[in-house]
Image (cartoon, rainbow, N blue to C red; front, side, top):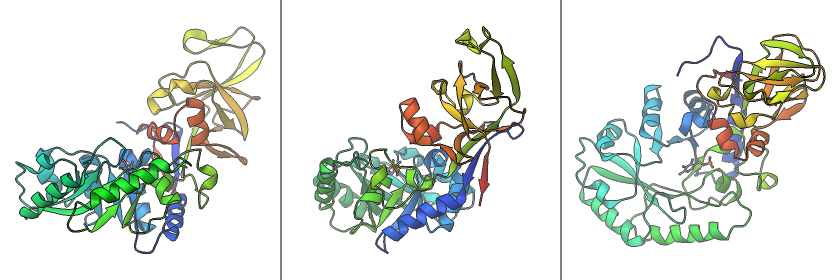
Length: 368
Ligand SMILES: *Cc1c(COP(=O)(O)O)cnc(C)c1O
């Protein structure tokens, strides 16, 4: 994708915030529990390479990604010896590529091991489905069989076993407890404990004891965002959001009553009012549902009016501004903030989706 370096729309990523979030999480953990930085999906929209560098500086001991290509991108960027785990399913045909690059893969079917001809050993983590119902084996017998098969070969190495929680971001913990118990029961199928037994996502890493585990998979909260609004007031430390989204007014003008704006002419001025056109649109991830959302100009709320276009958006101003004035879509301006959580609530989604949606057309600038 072409990045718009010559357009005044940009994402600012505060590296200090990422480092703080990781360090605060690490302080909370038993000393031998590693923080793995989850940097899938371009680091939740924050930029995979820079985030990975920052996370490593802050003490992250490895990376989790969703797909093999993301792992390869990290290797290519110079993360030569770092631990990298692919959380999603990988094709058998790509097992050698992973092995040659020392990338750990997730396995969850015994038959995946058949017919894979490795030229060099492959590290695998056994995924256990304790109640998420997505990837993973579901019984101790399966664990036993897969381990037995791996032990027979000298090309697979069972480096880890893990599960994923479906409800760790809820205050009600009974389903979480059930998953934990099921994970334990299935792990008992293994004759020897792998080097890394891990389960926690951000929510569990923040709220639950990690005694007995070797690592946490720290995603959304590394970026300073709460895993859910439900647990926001129960978090053990204050998360620092790393991402801000800014643009600038490229055209400012005054409407008179009866003037309409944007496709469908859905918004019509009823009085004299100042508006500004912004060079950002749904192709940047500012999806059409943002229409009506309030952004900040000079610390004051300014609503998006009319339909969001592919590359442009119009806001109503409280009064006249100069062309070139900065507009904060997500971030803080004069002490007032618009957060990814505000956008998520407005769009009826979650903060994860808000940042992931921001496309690579928007340049990322890294501060601190
Ligand atoms: C994405 C993902 C995580 C990270 O979850 P957060 O809620 O962002 O911390 C952890 N584990 C797995 C398996 C994932 O897919």
